[in-house]
Amino acid sequence: MPLTASQLKHLEKRLHEERTRLLEQLQDFVGEESSEDSQDLAGDLSKFPTHAADLGTDAANEELEASVATRRSAEIAEIDAALERLATAPETFGLDEQSGEEIPFERLDIIPYARANVAA
Image 1 (cartoon, rainbow, N blue to C red):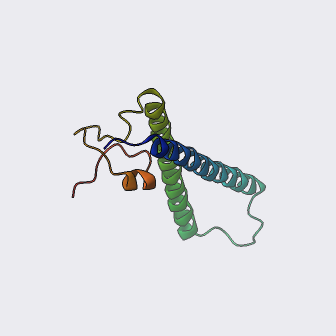
Image 2 (cartoon, rainbow, N blue to C red):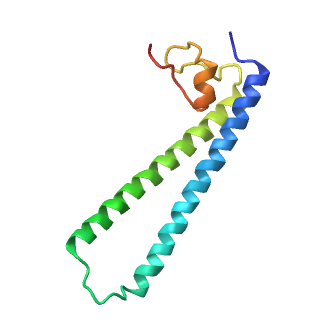
Image 3 (tube, rainbow, N blue to C red):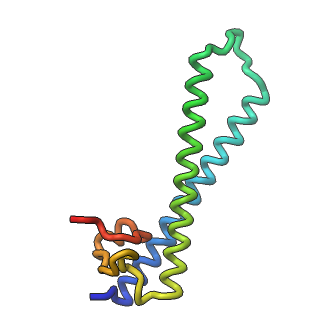
């Protein structure tokens, strides 16, 4: 059974909420990065030299943070694509892009930008 108008409206709201949440996370991340860069420019005021292990930890943390930021950006792009699908073809929203089968509303409620069914 296709999604009802009420379900589509609910999913549109969920998409906007999720997009806002992810954008806030991304902005927080960018704010933290610029704050850390400012601290780096000020220099380390400690009398102790930086240990090589600290540099490795810092590099690993930066790599992890960059990965998270990339993932958040990709999720935002998925949400934008879902909003576009919802606006242009609401009758096909919620259908698996490969099989054409309906994606259960329960799955869409959790991941409103889902493009595929989960294999049972």
